[in-house]
Image (cartoon, rainbow over all chains, first blue to last red; front, side):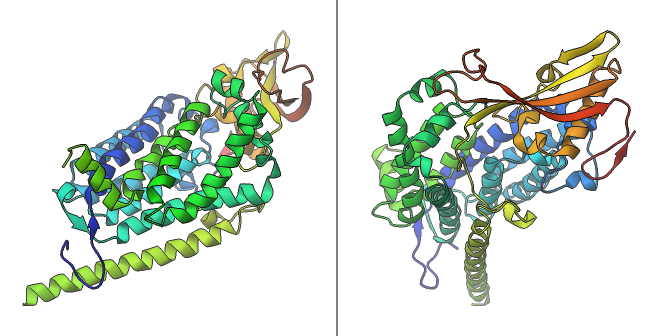
Length: 274
Length: 169
């Protein structure tokens, strides 16, 4: 399948090799912390947020032991994905199934990064990431286009909604209040920065500009590396200043795929990886 | 020759399928985006709607509870009773949780269980106070003008329906 067929130009496939690892790390960071919360969530029914969007608990209520087993199962699936080969696709399907059962058992607790991870799993499934020697081979651009659609939609959607419905993003007020949020803000540094209106104005404007422009320019090979560099700093900023779990890590996990394959290849050559 | 044909067919089928998935994803995300500011979002659209920190939040809020024991009403520490967090705070502190009466009744019933039957009644309140830039939510300076809103009164032992409609006695 790595041969030329139809009129589809092949692209450098090394990003899929890296993505396999970044995906597993991101998924691990999403799943592993849940392990320590099971003893609080599952012993009595009240704290299972079953009134969420997708109610698996409507069919079957899992207990504490089953919740632990699900988490262990998910971690085993991640190992299967990591080692690739014949277990790769089975690993993704079982990972999606077990993760679905776990998350929908405490449905209110499904977060943006869980949803991003879900879409990334689908892309991983149709990708060539299970193959060997990807660092030195090429593949069709279609799976990468799927990833671009997902991230384009995320950035554009969040950017346009801010642009149209919250004018305080333009004077920095929205940023000031988010950096002060009792739960979402990320500690002393965020609090301190919120007292600098000009800085918050700058952060607010750049957030909207990045989100709106990234959705479009991520597709253009000429602008792609620059947009992703800003994106990297953007997610690093979120990781430092906000308390939103592994969101930034999950988003950044897809960057080796989002990056223009030619640029990635040059980078890997420059750093003598290949 | 036949192997070659088979391989070509599979490759074309694979690429065709990916194009279909791609088109479906585009249509799906555009359809989800339509609900960006809607108060009701259909179930199918929730997974593909990306709405992150869109609106400014001007207030801090805190769910607290008091319980009636043999020796009168006492403040109870919900954070100690339900310690797990959802990355950004205690799970019961999420607005989608405390704004929903069914969920609150479940939390109340669960609180009675976790207090080991020592409480007879519970009252839940939502405290609000203005965000002051640079001042932590918990500091007395920030909590100068706390407003209180009654949320729920609960008698321990009352039957409760789980959010999926299952009766718990």
